[in-house]
Length: 122
Image (cartoon, rainbow, N blue to C red):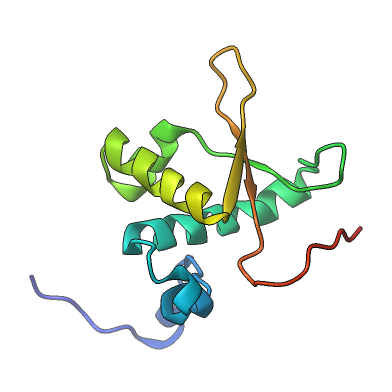
């Protein structure tokens, strides 16, 4: 496959998924798979839109809604792999899922990756 160069303003034409460097180099996250780290970046990306849409719970915590089907499609992975990546993030404490029932996708609380005391902010 032959790829072309970027010219001028073309260099700024894409959206990017930001993955915190700490997830890549930090010892605390060394057990996470690369795909789980990418998924965390995708979840963080959705946080901004959730905040703009005022998707806040009763404790003023931002949550996202990201169905398993969407994760599979966006990451081009099987259902099993999507479930595994979510489980990795949940097991290490980077996300918390809250069931909504009636076949609706879970609410996902994306937690702050920095290891610090828990404080609420408004």
